[in-house]
Image 1 (tube, rainbow, N blue to C red):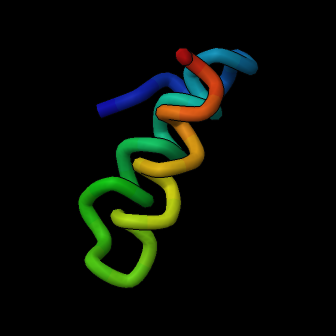
Image 2 (spheres, helix red, strand yellow):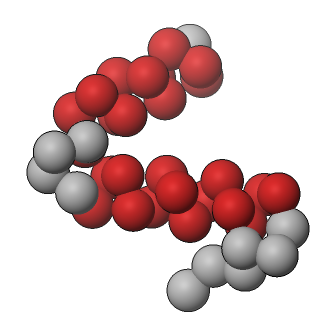
Amino acid sequence: IHDIGSPIGFIKANLSYALKNPEYKTEISEYIKTLVD
């Protein structure tokens, strides 16, 4: 469970949802990798 009352919580909740959803998992994973490289 994420606290979506804060900006970071909102981002974490959305990332968590996207990574658990097969429709978005690959694309969001690849995007996150570009941010941390």
